[in-house]
Length: 499
Image 1: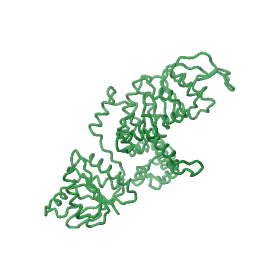
Image 2: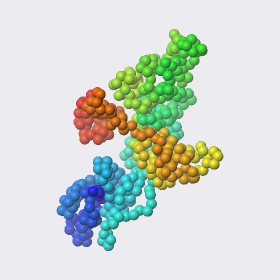
Image 3: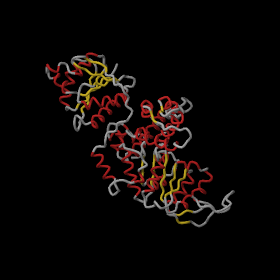
């Protein structure tokens, strides 16, 4: 049965107190006029008044009544109202998949009604209802679509925290201007990157593929004292294993078959600047040993040479793997991990960046239109409202890279100046779906052990949470949805994850 969501309004409270002018109140009117399995009530009237209303409501409604007391800075604060309503609806929708959602517009302030409309049209596809003495309870038709994401402005406390984090930095740094963002998670990562740019220490950037790791590496180099030096990029996963040492450290003439002359490696080429080692988790273990020595001694010995050369290189490494897990499983050296993980940045995935997707869509579309402007017959492209809604609602397992490629395909396939929902659907059809079958699609039998699989999953997420929380157990417990610090500790002990 449908789930009804409503803010608790003054008229409802008066009805519960027996005020005859309030009659039954909007909430009870709706519950008596329509069949609902449960109601979720948001209230900023305090626990006592809210519970008193819930007890009164239970006498006239046989379904489940749940109350959620929240604190708003004011009953008209769009930011607070949006945050609390979105959090509640999101958690209920996830737990009760398949149930239809209904938002009641009548109780509460106009700001609360406006937020219900926004959430219904732009995010949850919920039915909207209202009630009045004259017309009773009826469905509200809103004859337009909302496509823009809503991102509440950061609260003052968050802004102050970020300002303290970035203390000593200039208020704006042009090197980071290409990192398009407005969500709090990215603000924090950018502020941390600012701090790291000023310190000549190794940096390890972790994040899923397509999250912008190289963009951050270039920004860190550009904001550092090494700006005038070279920025050399190396994709460690693209070098054949037998050539890794020669590519990184250089070689002398005759060092191996095909070495017809001496050649400087990437480390020497980056002398005085920054060496970006992308996908460092792909390096063979033997090359990791040599890399560790180079970092420790700040000197490099070419393959086939007997004399070391002094170098002055800053390392920024990146990986889409969780290196702490790679260390545990013997695929990455622990001593090298600790040498690299001095300044650690964990980039959030695009699906975790609430409020950023529309911003990125606009920026990427501007870039696509600009780059294609001189191509024969090209028309400047704009997204239809329904096309944008499809993009905003997609999970983007390939992150920003996938978003950019999808927009590019859609712009190519759209015959006119508008990209339609069908163009976007066709552009998304060639995307790679999330790897959900990596766990759920395992072959049963032949050595399959469910406890081992569950342990692997638990360890993976425990390690990720501890890494993202920088060792803060309270924050890690929150990220994992565990009830308390002690519950997390028990999980860490059970699965042997280092604390």
